[in-house]
Length: 202
Image (cartoon, rainbow, N blue to C red):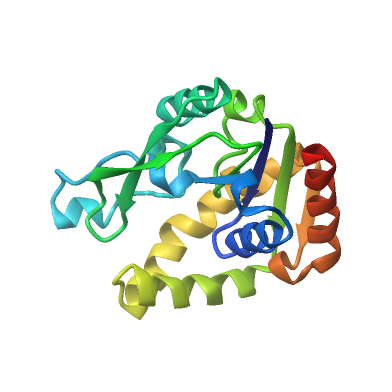
């Protein structure tokens, strides 16, 4: 089993890189585990308290569960992956059954901040992007998918996203084996990563 970590700042294009890599590979050979599924359940909090949740801090993730489920997949067993909602800040009662495969891609802004998780990765990738480009993607995503107003997006970016990126996320670039500038637009980097995975599959 080949375990790949794909990290990078919010709005950097990580999901696009994952999709582009998967396009080059047999569908049944790859399983994607999003870090976002492992946010701690905050459904019991008030709307005011939920608005103050810092999703960009490493303590917001239930690392123990993510690592335990990754280890379960490595033994050849399926897992029940949580489903998390940014709107309610709660985990759903339902889960998604994930079966083990030859390649596991773990994707998320904070995945390289955790030493235990990092140690389980065979390839570590950091998707890099210009701060202005990331902000534009964040605004579009939060307006369309997370129910925030334009003002709320800007306040959240200024209070949480930008300072946490500088403190925790960008420094993890030094752990990366591959740095992908321009995100999903970087076809050369995606081809190199895809070729490495294909070599493992054959």
